[in-house]
Length: 195
Image 1: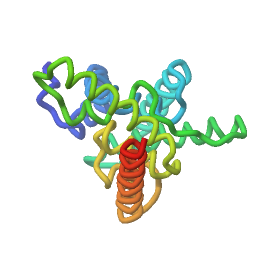
Image 2: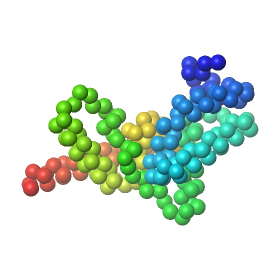
Image 3: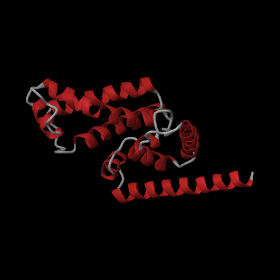
Image 4: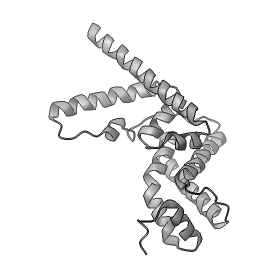
C-alpha cells in the first residue's frame, strides 16, 4: 500500500487501524524537522537521538491507547511532545537549555544560493560565520524562534504551540530577533568602516 499520497491525519488513522507502515511514513516525512528542533535545543547528537526515540515511543503509546485527538495537527503535536521531553531532561539535569546555532543551523541554506563564483562563496562563508556569531548573542527566546522558523521551517502557529506561548508572542520574539540582528550587523559594518 502506498502511503506517500496520504495526509498526516489519514496516516494516523491507518496506523491506529493496525497498518504499522503508516507510522514509518510519518517518521520518514517529519524526522528531519523533529530531530533538528530537538538537536537545536540540546546540542548533542546522541542526546537528540535518544529524545527523538523517546518522543516516538510516547507518540506510539498515545496513538495505541486511543488518546490522540489532535486532528490535522500531527507535526505540532509531536514537536510539543519533543519540546516537553527536552524540558524534562534539563529539569532532571538542573540546568536550562542553551539554544545555539551550531553547524546544523544555516539560515542561508533556506534562502538558497546557486551558480556562485569562488569570490561569492568566500563572501557567503564569511557572512555565515558572522551571522552565526551574532545569533549567539541573541536572548534565548529570540534564538529559539529564529531557529524554529528559519531552520525548522515551522509556522508561527507551530512555534507558538511548541513553546507554549501565543502567536503574537512568537511573532514579537521573531521581530525582536531580526531587529537585534539588524542593529548588530549595522554596528559591525560601522566598526569595519572605521578600522
